[in-house]
Length: 338
Ligand code: PEP
Ligand code: MN
Image (tube, rainbow, N blue to C red; front, side, top):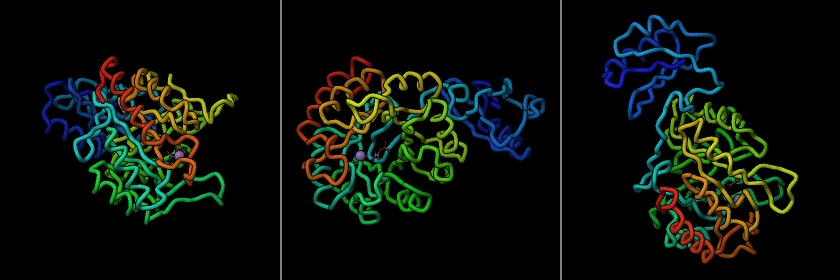
């Protein structure tokens, strides 16, 4: 259910409605917008007794939300969500967000060198995995806690906010204490206990689309996070499995306008995992910007042949600089800046 408030409703009127919702044993989620505040209601099993809410001061109407997700939807919040990051960058607005860095943090010097390079080229967020979800249990699993410490050093030196992945609820405690954005990977998109824990975090969360997830499944996964009270969620298209064998995955760029029609959450595109091949990353990063994504996530390594993870898709720093130059030229055409 959704309570729509008058444009001029005061904050105390909004709070009174929230109190009435809590008194029913349900959870209110006020979503202020440019033209009105709406209050999403979660926790109800059936319909909510709406007459008493409709009688409250400042309320226009109480409407049912028919979709299986509510808080992520444009019905509840018409305006785009803008997520502010430490250091002044943001995700979801006019400024294009460019997250770049190695697949995995392999060591202090490696992470710092790549950090300096991506910062110089114009990246706005540094990425690097400390906990790696690897298909083989014998593959490099990441440096763990030490990797997080190195990420904090990269932030201190470059000033870039850090995004890194949490694999499980216990790891999320650690990641939350260091990261500026918590990443939930494709393999965990429907790890519901992890999603709930991420919803209790007070840091932005980037949720990557599962490799066979539909748009609705992605939005419902995000709903788990918002349902716990964390509204700072970024969605990420990273390719899905198809019969195509010229690339690691098939990057589904049509997801971007489809998400933007249904949801107020920002959406970024990862052409590195989306293609798995270095020569396809720049063209698809351009395409991602052209289709209207709020940003891109790109893997960069200064010695890709010796990378411990995902070397074939890593851009050397010169290629990343080229990507930035191209994206900068393209962004204004679609109303963005990089
Ligand atoms: C990653 O970005 O480090 C990663 C593992 O990606 P995905 O979850 O999309 O496979
Ligand atoms: Mn990777």
